[in-house]
Image (tube, rainbow, N blue to C red; front, side):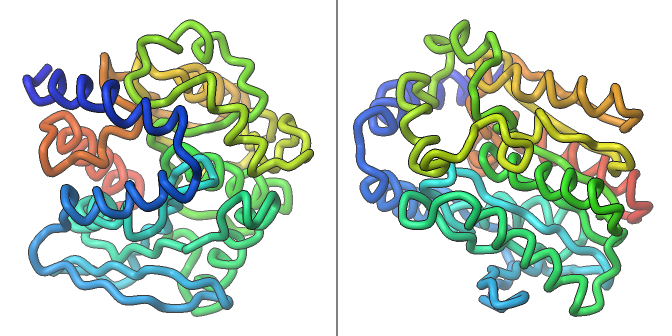
Length: 301
């Protein structure tokens, strides 16, 4: 493990975990937007623009070299309460460059201003908009981190339930899959997780759920069915409170015959690929995912 990993973990624990524990959603949003502009940057030559897909605003990212017919549909994380395409665009641009694809990041509505199922409706509308625009479903790779992982795997489950056309692959960084927080790691890793405060997670979740059942498969993919799902790639750190969210989702999908690659890393923070500009392990993870995507999709490098 790198020296930077130890420095980053200490900073996250002392600064960011404390902020997440006490700050209001507006304060968290503002801090994340500022930090993303200061610390995260996309590869040179990356171009971005705002477009609409089925009336959903989306940030479209194009690396210097894009192969026609390759699309990443990515849903940012942030507990359904904060985060935006802007805060995650540098990481997604890096991945898009590695696979030669354009990326589309929907700006879905956030809680508490827009409660469940607003975010779910927005990501489905963005998917339908891409298909209506002529993109072949099999040419799309869907992904997300944390709450965005819930949206990514929730979309897959919905398409499976409908018998609809599906993307070529799906992936998740530290995905949130169980909004009842029933996994043992939610308690066992409460101290070791350097970023997510377990004691605030339920309150943040209720801002999104606002009375909606947490065990509804629409919001908790762990309780959904995945018969016919495309191959999946999931990564998570062994000190995260969401460790069992990833493990159990992988086991559930495998039990239904889905090809799943679960990558469990040691002592890395929640959604560490965000820090690809400074963290060697983050770049390694993005490179490994890119290789998996190219293999699954038959995309030459």
